[in-house]
Structure formats: structure tokens, C-alpha cells
Length: 311
Image 1 (tube, helix red, strand yellow):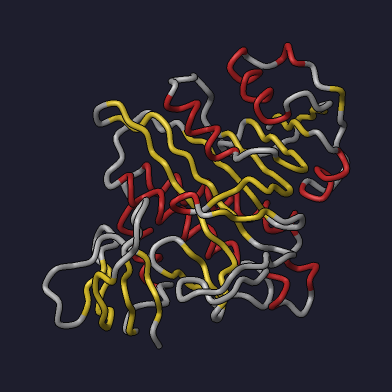
Image 2 (cartoon, rainbow, N blue to C red):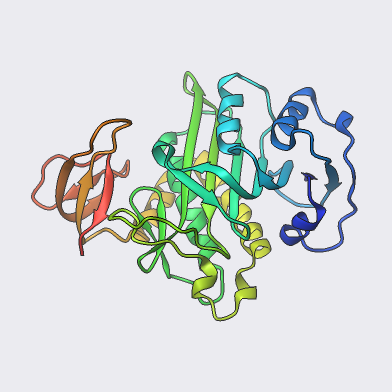
């Protein structure tokens, strides 16, 4: 894997060990990768290294403080048909320009993981839209499970928030682009609070935020380097399941770690503009094949909206 960074000091926190960093030689990149790097680093000095790693990851761009969203950047490149290779990772140490669903602001604090993943499947993938959402959720859950003392602690709040106890520790966004039945690009944006919990205005959707290290006896067991290494490993393994037709296996893992089944919830609309309204309320009896929610006594499943846990 070829790694580029603007900060060797920060990169060492993510990629420990002896790495032979050199001043970046831009000529080693294709024109489109040069364009990507220019949009990530702008005019900052860059360093590069090659590290041995098995699997699909070809390029890793590490920036200490991102001036803009890598997730939005990769979507823009995909929409403009910029030809990029499969298996690109973009990691930001911090950023004030991140966002969640519906462009809700999210501050990326130092010590946390802010990762954008770029795949180019170039094949048909059954249930690809929901599939990449499930892939992201399951990968984060399995990453947290691998940390000493946190196995089984994290759960998924419909549809894309990861909670430990009553606190949000992670969220993610997904975007898939296609040409006919062929998925040409898939972009995942994952935020995972490792060392620092952002200050948020609590509401019914997210009562509070927390970081993984808030729950650890031994903080070293959940360092950013350990979390990053585990996360990209789980993303690769679960990506291979999805593209090989194992959607149902990922779906079952998602359902197994849901924190809403059997609980009283309220579903609120999430319009791009204007006031929201209550869509439904009741006890969740099941999650369907496409993550639709079935509520007790309701014939029609819920397919969209924001969820409030009532008990």
C-alpha cells in the first residue's frame, strides 16, 4: 500500500513501526490520483512511503487536519467519472467540515477516526444500497468487539448510528454509484470516536456522545492505531462477503446487534427543509430484508425517518 501524508508525526500514531518516509514524488501518481491528492493536501508538503499489507488497499492518504470532507470529495469524483483505482483510504486526524445525514454538522476531533473508503466493484451487487450501509455498521461493531473489554457492548440504532449504552460513538454515510446494473463506485464515510467525545446538543435522537476510551480500563487496548488497523481489516472482509452474494449473512449480523428490536420507538420525518412530523410510534417487532421496520399492530413497514427510543 502506498501511503501519503502531510504529517509524519500524525501518521506514526496510525501506522506504528519503522517506516521509510520520503519527500513525495508526484510523478509516481497517475494524473487522476495527483488530482485527488491535490484536493486532499492542497499546497501542503507531502511525504510518501510504501508499506507491506495484504488485501485490497492500494492507497492511503493521511492528513492531520482536513479542510473539507473527503467523503464529499470522493462522491464528486465518482459523479464526474474520474477514473480512480479500487481500494483507496482517506484518513483525517481532525476536521471542522464533516457532516452526518442531511448535512448535519459533525466536528472531527483529534484522536478519533474519520475515514473515507473508496471501492470500485465494477459488478452487479444485490441490494447494494442497503448492503453498504449494513457493511459499514457490521464492520464498526466488529471493530469495537475486538477491543479488550468492549466485546458485545456496542449496538446499532436504526439506521446508521452505533451506540454503547445510551451514547453515540460512531456514525457513517454511504453512497453507491451505478451504470445500469453495474456498481461503478461505492463510498463509505465513517466517524468513530476513539479518544474524544464531541460536545453535542442532546436530543431524542442522540442523547449524548462518547468515545471508546470512556469505557476502557486500559486505554492502550483501544488506541487509534489499533482501531484503524482492525477497522480496515473488517471492512475488507465484509466487502468481500457483500460482493460475493453473502448479503443475508451481513444482514443477520446487523439484526443481531440492533438495539431497537422489542423496544418502543417513535419515527420522525427528516425533510431537507421545513418542519418534521411524527410518522409512527410503537414497539419494533422486526427488521426486514431492506432494513424496513415493522411495528406492533402496524401493517405498513417504516422505510425512512429518524428514530427516537422511548424506553
